[in-house]
Image (cartoon, rainbow, N blue to C red; front, side, top):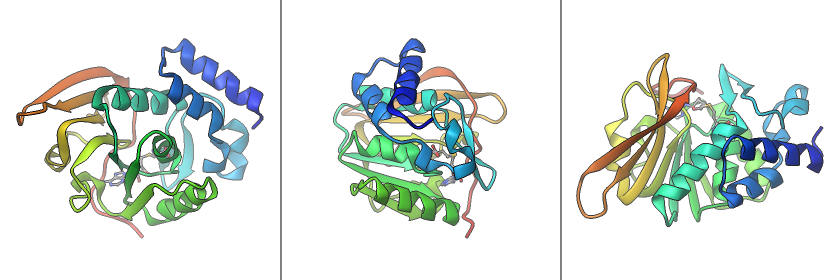
Length: 213
Ligand code: SAH
């Protein structure tokens, strides 16, 4: 179930759903998703579905990981610094780390962060820094970021994330309670203007404040 053929089938499915960025497809095809799951679920790793990772959280569906990554890369151009809010299993982090220079990822649940750290290390991805904190506040010491990607949904876009977006940068974020929409927010180059596009309906876990050990 974890064979190259199984992964190729997943990539084909993503293409059929409209994911077009060849680098994104290639990286998804070559990144083992099963190591981001508990063993009991690893046989389902290459299904295009969200899966539980404990603590009431989920590993995002591959389609949504691919889509958010391609939107971010397409919108922000040069991506030397990217902030991810919601490390979770670390799978989205691993995909990003293979596409951009540096990834900063924040998770509020410590045991999830610890597991993600081990997996990223196993994959030899060294351009990732993890932080245990409330990612709704961003990571001000490391900003501004060319790209910000949130894998948890706030009711409103946190102003701290907008403030940490570099000129020309892009924020990809699910927004809303219950019914959620995926938004792409661009910070214009020479002004403080933000341009918002709504992309599609999505279903993410909520962005919660504070941290747990
Ligand atoms: N990208 C992850 C998705 C995990 S689900 C993956 O593919 O595995 C979203 C994650 O966001 C959860 O782990 C949840 O704990 C985390 N989260 C929710 N609110 C947060 C916050 N304010 N700061 C940091 N992480 C948060």
